[in-house]
Image (tube, rainbow, N blue to C red; front, side, top):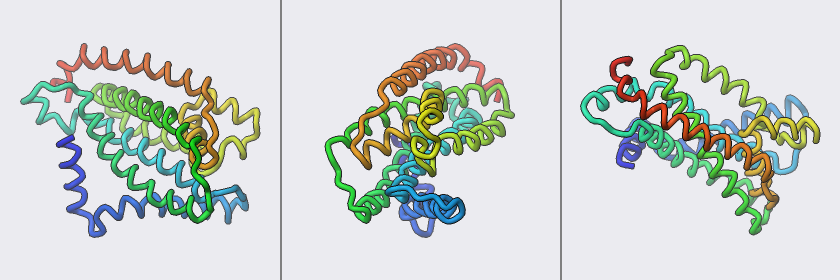
Length: 245
């Protein structure tokens, strides 16, 4: 947590608007995607600004953590050469930093929900299992990226390409269950955990709908297994990290 606070203070020192930028940034992207969706593609969806804001909020956290994790070992090589610490701590640090920014992005969402007159019900609690699965997914994937990044430098170029494709397949700026149709949407929810999480989060926050429990449960189990594997790999090969970077 100390490292996360230090990074946040360092970023604030270089920003004229301070923490307000962490609110303005997701709002700006929401406006861009809203323009593309409603003006260019001539699509209309209920609560569209809130729909996009939720997608951008989760996506920004994921994409920033993923791209930062690739070079975590190289960036912290000076620390690792002097102190032996669990390597996944670095992943937790970047998640804490971006998690604070994600919390800031909730403020404009509250504004959009107030504008649309959306009533919050107890169903909003369904966002909890979706968000827990989301954080587990991000942690596991970032650990994999961190580990692979030590051995394959080109992963730094591959990850942004994969994220770009995933962005359009996950319904970040459109409701995947509405725009793709029932059959195609169900297939996408089965194979794309990020699409499932965004869809479930929107359903819970805006409509109080329950999660896609089967899809969410299967994805969660897969990432738990992947997490066990990558933590074991990191412990086994972490002694080689300094030599390779």
